[in-house]
Length: 369
Image 1 (cartoon, rainbow, N blue to C red):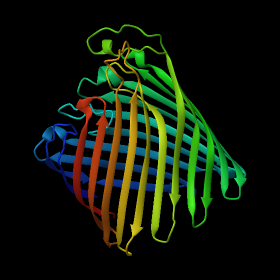
Image 2 (image 1 turned 180 degrees about the horizontal axis):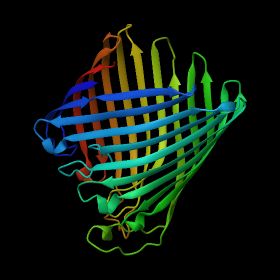
Image 3 (image 1 turned 90 degrees about the vertical axis):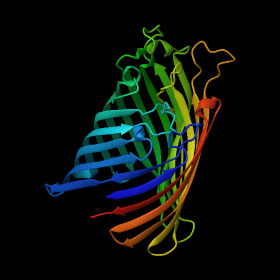
Image 4 (image 1 turned 90 degrees about the horizontal axis):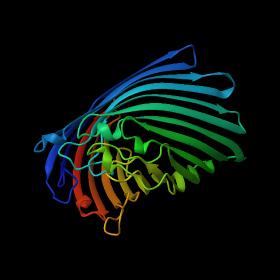
């Protein structure tokens, strides 16, 4: 159970600032049932409820319910099957936020299957997922309702005692219900390494190539909404990378670095996709057995595709997002803790309406039973 009281000086994340207090409740429950010696069934439910004192249009009630089977089979093979239902929203200030009175709200229903083999010197992981997106407000359904399918294969081989070479290939398919100009598949191939050096560093990094291919030829779609989703190109390609580095330079200090570059689905009229390039750097310093100091810095560049038929006076949207957070976590006893955190956010966009900066303070209490 988590409870937080927060204050922000820019509740809508726009250049017209408005402050508000809001309360967050985050209860959750999980049940685990072992069976047949090495197998496990998990049922999990959690929610995130936010109540805004002055701007109730921002209220959200996110929920996630899932059921999961984990099978540990013979010869190092594992099988993981999970079904999930989620009610969520697009966070304020993200590239998906339209700055409407209400945040965009949606539901997803999906199934994920993953099987992995670890044979000592070689390994393989196959992941498949299907996800149905349904949007609930702000006229987003006609634009963004879709079926997402994903398949990915990762091969690994021991290069050194503590290091494995990686080869990863994947494809993600998006099939839109109505916005057919955006039907596409993204193909990715990358290589890298995974390492675990005792007492020093662990991590994984992939770098490669991503290729976006639209399924259908460009057409003039009907209606005032779909007609603005046009494109001048049938494909796009760029560099892909993804990684996570965990480093312990001195005792009681952990530093985590996460770089990424991916192609994302659009919500901006006239564009067909955007590329997100960023890095997240976090540090946790244990000041005592019960008190931790945390710090986080994030940067992301969102570069949207050029609008169809664009001229020099209608440039493609480009955003630079920065966030900094510092906080203290205190564990009163093993199962109860509290934290105090300050967060600064800034977005610099070449489109004035999307510029903003915000300051947020959060006091929270967490309990685990």
